[in-house]
Length: 331
Image 1: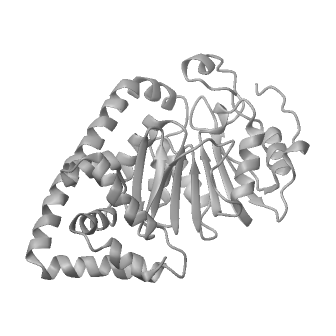
Image 2 (image 1 turned 135 degrees about the vertical axis):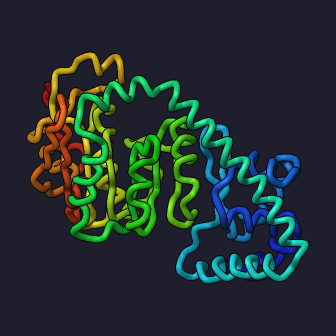
């Protein structure tokens, strides 16, 4: 980040508007073009200049490209913070700029509403399936309370919510974590999560498309990893846990919420469950092989399916995936 590049990048009315908008929420290039009333290629050129100056960053999600305010390192963070403060002061003192920003925010509100509407349509299509599954296990509120209690003994730090789905876990822990990265492979689910989480500050929440067996993050990037009702979708859970260990810092924690071993075979076809839950022995072996020291599991027996919470602490040097044991069939 070079200060001359920053001032040059901000020396254009459209880029000032983009910088102000990205301080509010993450936006797709097409959404940004809609707010600005400009063509997508033109907006992309402006975005490129802001990215080159280190004020914004791109992230591809399927065929869409999302923009957010750049996540700066310790050296650059004060400059980015000062830039946002300067834009806020300009809006307070410059009537013309304030009028433009207010108009942009009105259009932004329409985009927020469209996201919520799309999420509601998705829920309407799948509500019956989810309600059917919820009836089989403990109430969600009780699971969330027990999970929060299990993680309350030390700071969450940077949290990775793998398989975020609707974004509920990210929403639950956003207030106590330093930041939360919500990851999901399914683009439609990410759009549902984005609608749920769009009220949170962009500095505290980030949504990323990715696979739990090949996480797009550097080693030792997080302090806490969550896998909430995700691992039963994995035919082989070992690679997912090895990846979780890789991106956790030494002493970091993993929290797995999933079903105890059961025999509801219809969940394979009706809900695409690859595994019919896990025994405590299976989970202990999986965690050990991935480099975790496991705590005693927590059982919630308020339904036909027992929900378990398994917590593991990452050892300094996780074992290699090659030593992962073969799993018995979970039945």
